Amino acid sequence: MRFQDFLRSWTSKGVLLVLVIAFASWGISDVFQSGSGGQNDIVVVGEETISAQQLQSEFRRDLTRLQARNPSLTSEQAQQQRLYIQTLLRLVGQSLIKQEAEQLGLTVSNDQVRAEVAAQASFQNEKGQFDKALYERQLRSNNMSPERYEDLVRGDMTRDQVLGTVASGRPVPKALAEALYRVRQERRNAQSAIIARDDALELPEPDAATLEAFHKDNAAQFTAPEYRTITLLRMAPEALTSTIELSEDDLQAEYDTRINEFNLPERRTVEQVLAKDEATIKEGVGLLDQGQSFEQMSQALTAKGATATVLNDVARDKLPAQVADVVFALERDKPSAPVETAFGFSLYRVKAIKPAGTRGYEEVRDEIKAEMSLRLAADSLVRLSKTIEDELAGGANVEQAATAVGLDTTKLTIDAAGFEKAGTEALAGYGDREDIIGAVFELEKDADTGLRESRADSAFVARLDAVEPAALRPLAEIRDKVQAIWKLTERMKRAGTAADALAAAVKAGKKLADAAKEAGYEIVELDGLVRNRPSQARGSTSSLERALFEQDPNAPTPIIDAIPEGYAVAILKSRETPDPAAAAEDVARLAEGLGRLRDEDLAIAYQATLETKLGVGINQTRLSELFGTSQTQ
Image (cartoon, rainbow, N blue to C red; front, side, top):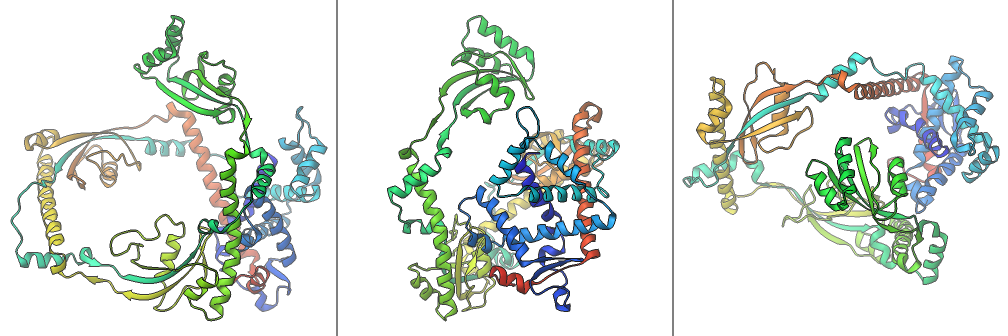
């Protein structure tokens, strides 16, 4: 396991199991009320405690790693997004496992830890030997001491020992995997007759009583939704970028700092001809030897089922190693020898080569400016948010708070789906659209949301100004629409009646194809249907295909379902049951995957039991004080 992979794994393993159980929603006992925890403790886990200092220290380490992958992430943003909870959950999970290991008498010796560290490829030199200098250098670059890292390795090994008591790490029995493989890979073949709705059918105009009854019986279809009128102040980094001023010196300094990002490797444009069998590719080699061009050879082979593709500006690391070695050793316009891969056999030719180089400042200047502006705008948003919170807390309304930070408000009238009365989509394209709409439809009239953060790294405050209740639109206002839908419904009814008649004929002994031909209906072949994978074929629906797989293949009956064109009547023709013996590798992979899923379920249940057994309590007040958040967030 690579060093960075290990860091990611130990950061997540303690969180993964705890998140799905009670602790994730704070649904645990508050042991601090009974005096079990110290004044500065955040969590009590069995006989251990997690202090505020420990949590802060671990959170700073986690934040440093997160910022290495996302440099624009500030500590304020991390706290607003409550990322410290991930750190806390990890510490709780580690404590639960550690205490359980002690009760079980499980230990990991220093020699075992040293052996595990030495075996990690990240710390080995080119000869495959452990390199202490490399080890210490890697740790320093990640702000970690050897003692700290070895503690993490010990904890990871201990966790594997503890969970190993319930998780076998073995595949499920072969018979089970084979049975599931047969079910998943079974193919069914069917015929479908399409009874098209006759949109040209002339219908008598409905009388007033008929339309009134239809309007009443389908009230939900003709009811205007509830509309809410709001005043919205929205702040998002992309909306604030225009307020950010950057000098050429700022941009040049950013470019110099990030120069390594703009180094481009050699890239090649490559033609590939792929065939499933070696004989076809060898035939292509023969055509090239006879003097045909690569294009002529490609056309000849594609006519026989081969596939021709072009890979534009591809770098070595974007290709499988085996292919990359061939492609990046080729001269321009020279075809390769046949190459065997997991997909078949291929021939390659390099059409163009772009040498390695560095993108110049002028080329990337606008990109840098956009990225820096967005990053600085995000920091600006934090400051503006604090000002708005202060304004609202001091009694200002939404408009006054907006004026205080130099922003404008927006007036909207929307339904619960976010559409305006004209049918246009409000806030289209905004990542926080669902957050805003959801918050607005929880408000009482004249109340506001307060300043809220959204999942799109933006913030907003909205006030509910007016509510227009849902109401049935009067028939007089929408008579034409009601009449059009009535006619459509009547035509569908006639198509449904015809479908019932066709199905009855099949049940009486006629073949579907014969009965459909007599009635003038089109027949569509539905071949190779797979369970739980809708084909989206014409003349079919997911519910129709589900019904085909639920049938006894030895006694098929016609299935009727509505389709966009009208109705379909389908009948099962045959099924194809796969032979697991002919797919031994696929069955083995399935058995291993099922085994992992079983082990994960057992591990989750085990750790949930540990929470109940040892007890977990949180000092929510102290946690909120520590990170400046509300308990009700």
